[in-house]
Image (cartoon, rainbow, N blue to C red; front, side, top):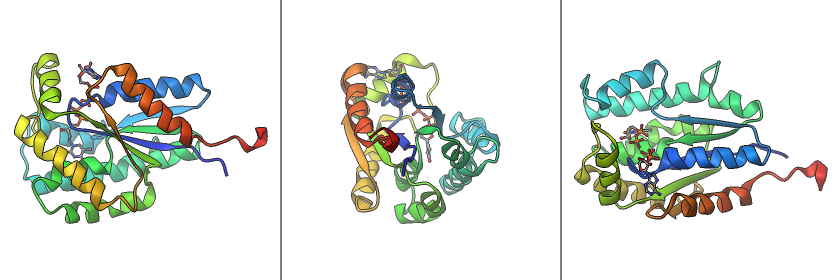
Length: 213
Ligand code: ADP
Ligand code: TYD
C-alpha cells in the first residue's frame, strides 16, 4: 500500500539539520510530493517553555526538561490542528528536524538513557520514523559554526557537552539498531554532497505508485 514517509533528521547542534531539511523538502516538492517540514522543540506552548529554558530565561532540572520534551513531542504528534499523525493521514511526507533520538542523546548524558527511552515509548508507538538520518559532524566543527553564526549560545552548546551528546547518539543507535532504521551521513562536507547522500537514501524508500506500475 502507498504510504508517505516520516523522516527524522538528527545531529548535534550546528550539524546542518535545518539546512538539510530545507534542501530535502525542496527536492521532494520538485518530485511532486506534498511536504510538511517541522521541528522540535516545537513552537507551540510547551515548546515555548522549553525555549525559555534553553535561552536561560527560565531554569529547570534536567529531569524536568526531559519530561517537557516528552510532552512537547506528544503534542507535536497528536495536536488536532497540525499534528504529524494528521499530516501523514492528509498525504504529506513529513520531515522533522529532531525527534526522540535527540532526547535519548541530550538527556541520556544527564540521566539513565533507558528511562528516557521508556518515557518516549508512546511516541515511538504512535509514529516511528521510516528513517532516522544522523548528520555526523565533529563537535569542534559544529561549535565553530555556532560561534561564527550566532551571537548567543544555548544551554547545551558547549564543546564538552556536544562531545558527550554525540557519543550518546551513537550509544542509542547501537542500543536500538534492531528496532529503528538509522542512516548516518558524514556532515563535514559541502551542503551539496550531504544533500546528495540524503536524497539517495530517501529516494530508495519512496513509495512506488502502484497504479503506474
Ligand atoms: P542545525 O539546524 O543542525 O543547528 P544549521 O543548518 O542551522 O544546523 O547549520 C548551522 C550553521 O552551519 C549555519 O550557519 C549553516 O549555514 C552552516 N552549515 C550548515 N551546513 C554546512 C556545511 N555542510 N558546511 C558548512 N557550513 C554549514
Ligand atoms: P534546535 O533548535 O534544533 O537547536 P540547533 O538548531 O542548534 O540544533 O534544538 C534546541 C536544543 O534542544 C538543542 O540543543 C537540542 C535540544 N533538545 C533536547 O535536549 N531534547 C530533545 O528531545 C530535543 C528534540 C532537542
